[in-house]
Image 1 (cartoon, helix red, strand yellow):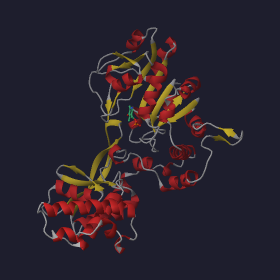
Image 2 (tube, rainbow, N blue to C red):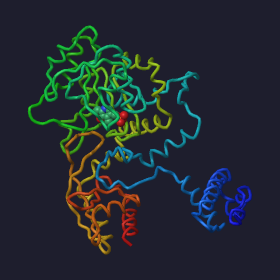
Image 3 (cartoon, rainbow, N blue to C red):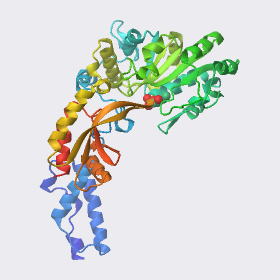
Image 4 (spheres, rainbow, N blue to C red):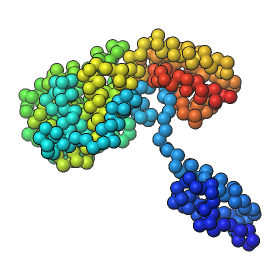
Length: 448
Ligand SMILES: *Cc1c(COP(=O)(O)O)cnc(C)c1O
């Protein structure tokens, strides 16, 4: 009982000088919990001593734990450039610098400076998209999933949207095309089979309640063998003839051609626009290399209708998103592709990757076993499924440590690696040039 009496009162305890530079509100909350716990532990004989220094230390440790930011920067050594779990596309420091001023000041987000009255939030990106893609009009929402939902809800509520069975895909678990369609109010009209859909399937599916012929990028799977799918330009032709809308959910939209011959199968936004589609939507943070957003481009009269949908208000983007997106679209216009890290990584030469890998290997050889190897990696983000691109990696071996153990140690210190053929790899396709010394320092710390 003496022990219980010696526990300090909360209001006295929190006056301790050590807490001077901390939020007293949070310290009080934690101190209360600590003291209650201590009291319980004493009563249940879990502890039979108590020390004020220890109580102070526990309180501060808990404070640091609570206030430590949960989101933190990592080094992506997996080789996957558009890694959804690791934040997809990177934004360059330069882009952020330009955006900082606008975001931390009042701005013309919805203000027409010429007319001196209310303006249009989406106007800031329309001109750049018109110049880049020759679209009539454009709009931006939270992400591409919202774009799909909004388009279907605007044009196909209680009406039929025709989709090939080969394209009823699930992307990343929480986005299944059939379910999104149902939620949006659209009636799904499935056509064709898993492996084959023909132009006549689209023609035969059209009736007086049809509103959209939709094409969905298969993104994370591909079918091989006895297959056929209808090209977008044929779907557009059928749609035009029957006076319905054609819509392509492109998934990861790329503005310029892809390297390594990938674009023969994956036409760019520009190439697709040559067919004059009604509506096209794509993600802002996949291969476009910008911020999380869903970009919709297409016919002016259709975009006008989308703007009138009340749902748009729920899906609208913030000034920071618009500012970054405008900055990146301008980079495309000015051919300043170095400002877009995703493209920079995609186009880095094998020689350059080898140079970086060798530098890291030479700096680590004295503490672990490293080897520079040729490898292949995926772009990620549902772009070009199954199509690998060449890359360079180093293997990391240390004493008799199992790869899982090395991977875990590195992960706990902020490096996400990949295990292949029973070895831990650092794939340089997704490691930034400015991160080389940091990755060396982390490995040296882990294996010290
Ligand atoms: C990735 C993807 C989406 C979802 O896009 P988000 O920007 O992640 O919302 C939708 N459709 C396809 C085909 C995709 O590849």
